[in-house]
Image (cartoon, rainbow, N blue to C red; front, side, top):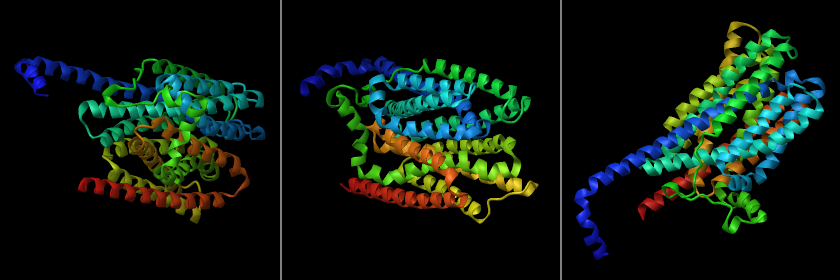
Length: 447
């Protein structure tokens, strides 16, 4: 060790130029990670701008024999199954290629809506379910790795950077509800409600927007597994076999932290399906008509986008995640209680404001769940990111599929009771894991 010190010490006076080069290199790498964040966010914005608006209209546009609702149920059932094998696919393909492949399913699904039938919608829904699991696990892994790399290279707190990155990403994604629904509202005016030239034009425009999103994904940098001292598991080694790769998906279930998070992951799926399938059908449509669904969902999207950005900015670590998540739970609990008291609204101005206020409150809660759950998974499972996000999508999409299949057979009040019970269990599990982690951190600091 002494020899190394003597050899390197004469170089110290001349190290200023080296330091400048290192700083320049760090600046370029950090700016690259921010660039990748912006590209990924805009890619998802363009893809889901079209898909989210189409999804909100499925039950109305393709109402014959419940084709639209059934297709969405099949889609999310396929999504759930696909999430079981998403981890090995993402590790084989890489997160960038997974995002690119994932966009193809959304393009095909929108194209099938130009010729809606059981022979076009069902196969497209099955394929989209598989590619959706790939794009979400790949996108979540890419975003988390970019955030952690940026934090490591710039010596920034990892929790804060994860919050900021997730805030921008989910804020952009939530804005799809605004842009897409306003676009559908404008274009559908050129045709009759449900069918017509306006519908055809709408889906052609959606296909063009999605194509731009796919092209943009090619400009993402490939993430290597050793940048910034971070490790990402690859297809080599212990996970080289198919059985080993599939086993990797279930590794997080051996962790009690993931087991405690499962009710929260389930609820995050229920609350999304609730606003798509139940809130629009039983609350919005009876009050202001199907044509008003786009406007109500736009309000939901505005609140979702704003609070996603705000929640991301306020995230600094576990304590902030706990406080912000608790706030989101309270927002949605208020809406559930209000709807349990009375879910029928008239067409008056006061009742319309009340209805749109509930849509905004639900959007605030959704923004919290999206940003904080993803940031939390990034913090808790830094070395098993793909598997953690696979678990998120397994439970989330499974819950969504259940809502689409079960909702026609149960009352709205029964759905509210199910939501409330799941939310309570999710809150208890989340608080337990928060207290456990806080205790662990305190014990480590005392050593």
